[in-house]
Image 1 (spheres, rainbow, N blue to C red):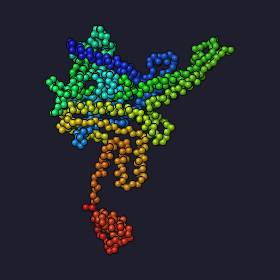
Image 2 (image 1 turned 135 degrees about the vertical axis):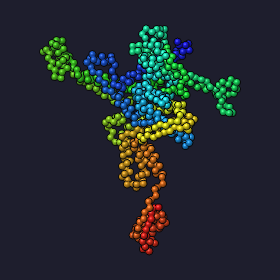
Image 3 (image 1 turned 180 degrees about the vertical axis):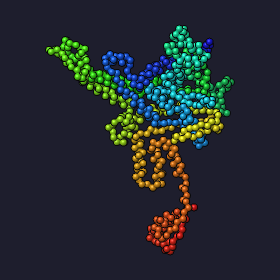
Image 4 (image 1 turned 60 degrees about the horizontal axis):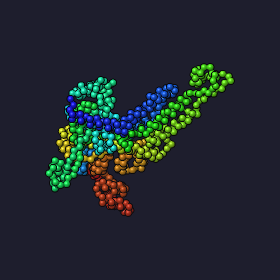
Length: 614
């Protein structure tokens, strides 16, 4: 039996959910988003339009120009890998601790299969304008906590419609996740409410009587025996008063006798409620220490009222025009018109069959007017308009033929690069928003690390070169995570194009053709790797730089018998240097220049043995 307090909470939750459903921004999103997905999938004719076309004998053709645009963005996302890096505030002393956090983030990325989960979120956003990532805690078979981040279906999320900030932690009061669930599954998950859940899906239930503020279809599906389970995260605000005393800041919220200047601060405390219309399944404080929503949004574009939209939405009208003009043109080319006097033919049904055949024979009575219209000119006009509409697709999407790999009038590498760079500029804001989403996710993961990773543990991570390496989280690392302050950095690997491959090959050929000494060529290797698209090149470059800083290896010990007077001045100088006799080397080279014989030449003596090395 629901208490009076439960009913008050339920009514507040219903009001919140109704506010999201009925607000113009999210109401329109709920209407437009399913259509966006249908157009992406090629379902671009309504049922009414298909019925009308079939009545005319006209094919509902669809030339999906939206599909390759979205696929290009997906491909760019797959090439532009990103990872979360934590940086300590104290340079040097916090580096090792921050590296442990970065490894934890990589571990979370791998156990969550986040490469694919983020891809699904990115795809959802690019289709309907809004994607979502949930970051939560789970437990493995050994009851060890694991932080994971997963994609959440955007059509199941109903945020506070008054929120206009990208990070809805800043201005949203609540977010509801509404999932349809079979009645039996809901009863298994919440056995204490088995009878109440069954009552929701019963046709003759009277629980909906006198509830004009709710629509039954928003909560139950009696035909398919499904119930909508709501999970609402909402903020409960507390007021805190802080005084700045000689001993530092002091909380004086409950100190009514305190006299002095205070700073009043309003702080949210996150609450979690699980419910299904008239059933309050759970209502408690958030299980997490952080007062953040567990969802990170990915917005592509947003209208001024907050409604998300995408590139698909911008292309729908042009896509409709392309489909309808192609369908109309094909229909005109496949049909003929007959203009004739009454009684010119005996059988009009046979006339229609003959006109539809490429080799049909039309017979009409002598003396009557009869004329056939081929509709070619009208069909050509439709095709011309269709080509103009197809040309509008790349202009609206900002994706040139060069970026799509299509045939282009531009032939030079520089020209292609400029065309591609123009396209990259237009889609840069989309990937900038993805960076914001990644940063929000990184913040949530960090807060869960602090709360749940309290025991020593070892785990494996796979580095950029594909090598597995163990990472140990010890007591000192746990303490540093809980007490330290770290900044979140999003590092992204740049997207490499064919132009960059050409540039890399050009640099490699240039170095090879210059005939540089081996030492100089080795010194230029970091620059060559930087221009390449080799994965893990940063690690390789660091290793090369470290090798360059090492002292040169000492020469091995060896003995040579030389006839000194038979050597040239250059050879004498080289061997003198190798023996560590720099003064002799200088003397010999100078003697050769001045034309004066060296001391060894004057004596004509051989140097029987030269020792080089140690």
